[in-house]
Image 1 (cartoon, one colour):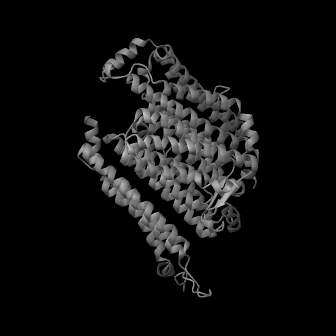
Image 2 (cartoon, rainbow over the protein chains, first blue to last red):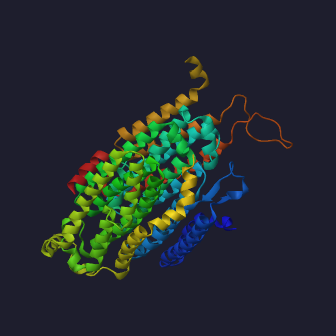
Length: 498
Length: 121
């Protein structure tokens, strides 16, 4: 019965986007209200459909009444349920920040809702071409959102992002084309059978895998395909940075996981071990270089952006290793990273608004001045490093465990090394916040030229609550990770069945 | 080789379009030309899909009442590419909008000049 409501996960935010335009004509306060209402409905819907899918097995529906392998199928299994709920909850939470921080009118909220449409669509679709369309919808919305800062700088970053994003999506499309030529189908479940029939070592199948992985890895921002990402995160409005850092690459990472396990299946890796090795090496390089680049940054937002390059490397390593623990770790880290990074970007934006502080040095004495905000963000940073019991630890633990089980010792070493590097760049910020004298910060703020009297002196309560909420969720998820494993058990079974 | 040229030449067009598009995107320092390169690149992919739908002696896939007819060319890639073209047009529109914004802010659409202007800031 719930099956029939699955398309609403895509249509609700899409209708909300149209409604936002309509109400925007009447009143300036319309679009934020519509966006809030729509995302609240979307969250309820995602939680309801998600719980049902986890409790009673996968839900699927055929759009427009076309029978499954020919028509587009929407599927919600345990994994999509987690991702679609994450998208709904995080976008609703960050909307609180967006309304406060960047009230840029109707187009902003329309793009925001279209982004949620695209991301939810990517999470629930069971058709590889449909995934391309949703990839482009979320891409287009993201480019516009990055440019909504209104500065020339943000337009340059958005154009760069657009170029990379479009080529990435085009490569994905080319991969889909190769798979279509090899099998004649676009349905994910059907593809998994027909690709095996076509032979995993056929040139067409190998080429399609290569194009799809490179396309989605660019969207996920793995080194060396990450170059669009720091500029885009840095120059976007603060609320948009938080939203795209938390969700856009996460959903691209989900798409990669979905394609690798549902479409190509673990049997592909068995048949073509070089594909697995290549993916592992690619991801390990990303982990190390991303961390090193993050250590080298002085601006907070840029540092967080490079940190993402390394964290998504971890996710991809997990999914490439492909043992049960590693894939579960990849899913946990995907979700955990979204929450931690979202919270940290909200902190960065809030501190920038309140103090005009953008660099690590300007964070000096922050914790003395704002103990709650400073404390919550320190918790998030330590969670990201992987201090137990936070979710950052749980994800890394399962990925490393999977690597050891698979006998991939060098990968376990890379994961351990990256933890130290993560500690290196976050410890620097925490040291500034807690140990460095506040005087250094006052000098920096006075040099900032923003005029302290124009800025609010305390961070708004709703934003502090948001950051504290993210920190609490990061800890609770870490504690509840074994429960998560229990409920995802059937999904992992079906993903990893050859 | 001759057979490849006479029967599979559309695939050579695909390769040429993809290469030209990628080259223009990388080599040109003019943003508008980069966008043109992007369009050429995407067109290469469109031609690839359409070529893959072809079959010798195939008719347009309009089934007469009572069925029969055929063989038909595959209609699916045509439909996919229709969608992809729409996506491409929207992307071009957004990209050109961004270029206008860049020109308004910096007075140039040239990547190198832009780097100089930004270095002066």
